Image 1 (cartoon, helix red, strand yellow):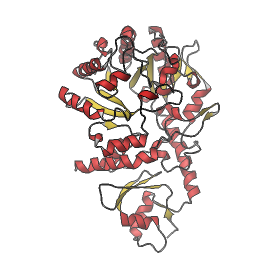
Image 2: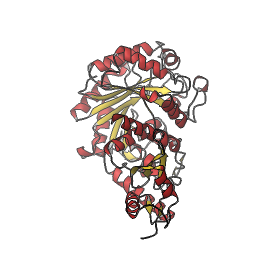
Image 3: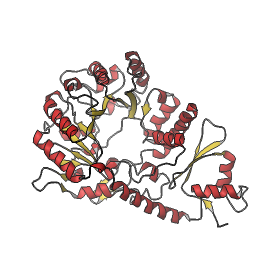
Image 4: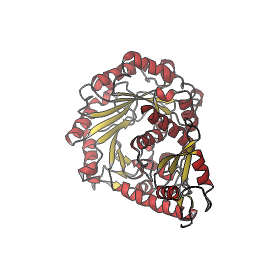
Length: 459
């Protein structure tokens, strides 16, 4: 028998709901297995005198937990694998979206787009024209000429994409997109959505995402119309309006320490209104992140780290009240456990690193929703007599993956997290510096335990 050792990329997670059991995950085979604590102890101290049977050893080797590779050989292998995964992802679906307008009817204190307006109340009024819409669609077809490689859902974003004064151009975007075989997902504050009754339909929209900031009192103190004031009641009514149209609705609750307990209050309200019982409705809690460039809104926000947020959701049983933001760990591992399948590895956190194109009304193209309006992140231009032109930023965004990220190459979690959100990695003239891990390692066991319990309860 060749000399074997425990793979450096073996990740053990102690199962809190089971006595002395561990869920093992392997960082480059994607294997997922549940073993007794005694087996795990023998694996950790594995040697030629191991009590494990030959059959068990060979099985663990096939799953990747035992290997004849040295640690450095494993790291080199993962680096090469990451590059191949990224090359493959780059050839697949291209996703597109419209930044309809940078203008907004709200003045949320924590908005990361406030830089576009110099942190003031005078937001840029630049909005798509029909001529620019035609150019954007032409650019999409130029970037992805093969229809089968285009994501069929376009994003509408802002600012606020569904401003009542932009009704005509939004109608044009949506109807033309429908003619080209696209449907839409819109990320909106929900305040003016009733002005778009003619197009809010499952014929055009796959999803409407609407943001709330907890219960009525907290929400109105943070997310208010700059002219009309309180917004909570109107948004609640508009949620019912969208559901009545047969369109899927996801409510994103921007969550911090101050409004954490409002999740139960919202769930109760949605139960009473009958929204929760509608299969088209989903409640999702998302932690408010602190952006380095904003320093003037801390009085109204009590920030939670990602791991603290997830632990509070899990320990308070709030995960039954709503879904929660956890890098997608719960959803993906739940699917793997339910289907008894391996984890699908990735070397990028999202399509912004290989194939996302967001068109703004100035003729600029961005890759990430969280960088729109920031000129240093423009990856291209489409309002040109020569068609689409690219900047050096396109290469920086689309070539970055865990295989060429210095602090990802030796990380056991690299092909699960994909290197974290690139928008929050340090940006330099030559590219991106260290990855933005954001407590991924700490959230990992919390979400896996949640996924395991969810699958167990279904049996």
